[in-house]
Length: 63
Length: 395
Image 1: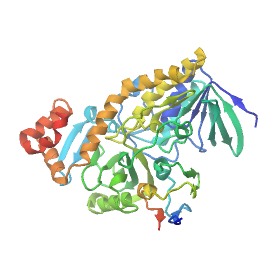
Image 2 (image 1 turned 30 degrees about the vertical axis):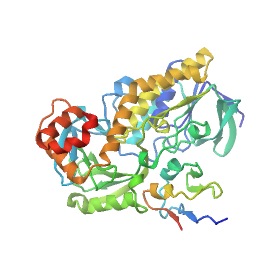
Image 3 (image 1 turned 45 degrees about the vertical axis):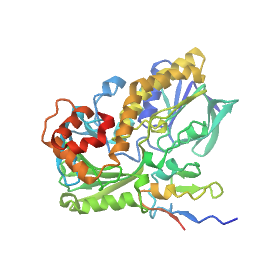
Image 4 (image 1 turned 180 degrees about the horizontal axis):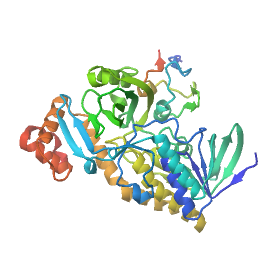
């Protein structure tokens, strides 16, 4: 099985503004926002990259 | 923490949640309103422009949350021809520019004064289910987990709504039905406090740049870009920064605040109720797909939602069938316009800058008696007959 691409959500605050755009658009509901952190479910995520486009400040990277 | 019981559990303390809670309490229900953050209304994630003609309908009185009362809107084409619309005709983002945190707090105060219990720093972490019906939520208050049982639960948890998804309601949106947004509060800018300004075309693919004045020299300068039109990460920021750079009256300004967020620009949802649960506001994708404005629709639907919630509790029937009264009620009031504006949005996204220029140019030279799609197209046809060919479906 081919390994998934790596997805990185920069939510230490250097880029992320905790706006929730990625959370709302994720078709699999696998991105979670609390006050100071955004996380995603590595197993559920299919790397569809929609969150990468939805992020207004470019805090989500995939490679 | 012991478990709690209430009649109506409202999850989310934004305008739609507070409005729903208030009207449910006024109609005789015991209501608990949950806000996951420590402060209602903060952080603000909003352009802060809104219309005002609907306020009496839902019982909101003007207060100190109003910054500026504007005369109208100015629509700028890509080559910056201007079309002015007075406030009455300008759609649901023009009328007042507001302090959203003050506005949200006022609505929560109105709800509390109507008898609603409010809990801060309290997030829903799961829905309670009994067979297929929703009977409340598991919540976490200051780190303590407990259950709140209620015959009616309401998801007013905004764009990134979890409640609808947990309840199995179809709230997913397509990438062409969402805008990614970024806004700066800027001082020392040449805004005109009499107008909310909108800039159309490739400056903001699938959306627009807005300038909403907060005071002389102070404005919210923001952008929405349709997610399906995004080519590179951070395009919202790139496009907004480019627009500011190309406008000397704004390039000289200073940024004092930044907010971002997602805005749904989708057609109305097929279903917003199930057994024991209703969705309202942004969580129910009630945002106007043309303007991106959600406050008015959320509050109007909130009044209907709260009233029906109380009726359901008092009659002992919170079934999906009973809650259809809300489903039908908000659709009668809002659905036709939401759908029509979604179609218009779908069309506008396809227009070239040259077409936008012609449309705004044709409109700038006429005084429309009434702002309707039909009147707009007639004015355009008189000057640029070839342009109206693109709009035959609307005529």
